Image 1: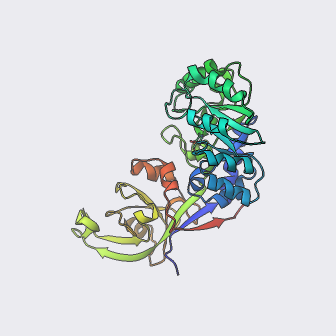
Image 2 (image 1 turned 135 degrees about the horizontal axis):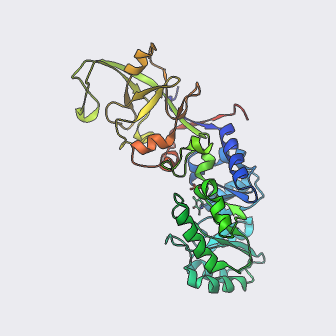
Image 3 (image 1 turned 90 degrees about the vertical axis):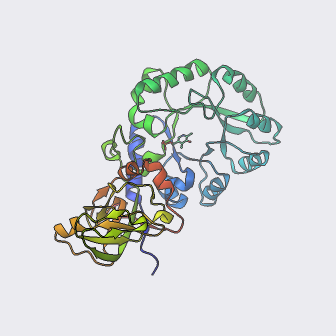
Length: 376
Ligand SMILES: *Cc1c(COP(=O)(O)O)cnc(C)c1O
């Protein structure tokens, strides 16, 4: 048998999250953002559920090609656009839409020989200073692209640096409005944070999304866990990381556990060794306040450093609940336990000083993926 660690992909949860986003952005078409192997969920699994969306947005031409091979004939958008001129040939051939955010991409497009006009998403830098043209140059770039025979249609695009506060969203929108007010074409502004929290602010600024671009929310984690939990947004975890106990050690008060011998048992403890380590994508930097779910929903703390292939937990709380831990007992590292317990990925991430996004993308290729079709 293979190591017992599994990433479980919950189809019903992904479906629920997509429907929630569709209802929040009722007048917009939805790009399912599936970059980074669908935030670690696997492109194929994401495709099977999110084919109910209007299009797929990602970074990698190879993944775009895979979607076409899986039979997707609808829109696909490259969020960072092309990286070299020959990417344009693939875009032409496969009908892939692409973001244009820098001068080099404009040049490559103008030199591209094609019969087929491209659908491009022209990106405005609305204050984030990552990708996009600065507001005062935006119109001239738009005009140049609009005059090219290689370009069939231009959608206006920007991205929010912060969606915690309505005021920050408003400032970006004002920059967008100043730069684009009377330019024709569809608009795309909102990521998960803006879809969930700022539809009214966007409307107040006289704007609306023709296309929204949800990523994290589709997978059931929060775009800003400090502002609101995923559960509070009504989202359900699309991924659970689960494993099993593969070793048990009864330690006495004063005994040391794990590498570095820096965890000294403050009481007699039953230590459970879980088949999950940093080589599976579990963060080594996590604090010992982090917890796992034992069996259904008994929370047990980590005790001892996370090593490459294993981590160790204090099973005393399980004993106090009258459970009898054994080799093969179920442990949930994040997501839903078999019995419906919930350990939000955002909570685990916070203990490691990071965000749910990073953990879900970092699940290692050696972790076997299983689909959960219950409730679909
Ligand atoms: C990743 C990405 C998104 C999705 O963001 P979430 O916060 O995961 O919803 C949207 N737009 C662009 C341009 C992105 O790169």
